[in-house]
Image (cartoon, rainbow, N blue to C red):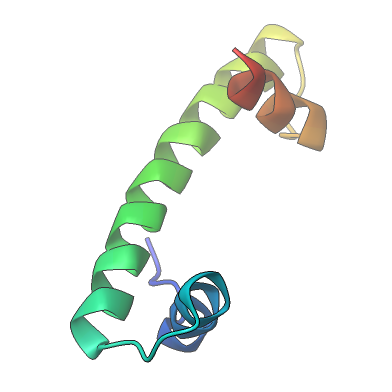
Amino acid sequence: MGELPLTAMDRIIRKASGLRVGLDAREELAKVLGKRGAEIAAEAGKYAKHAKRKTVKAEDIRMVMGR
């Protein structure tokens, strides 16, 4: 799985906190979001397969997040 861009992690933390962001914080957020994103994607894939589709749609992600 590819890495999430550290510049995006920096932007998220800065906008949320208004503070400077250390490299370690950017890397840790990327790691956590990557892991959680993969979990969400796997669950969404189950919904798509159950609906007999080969494509994961936004509705599948919403279903996972809504439970």
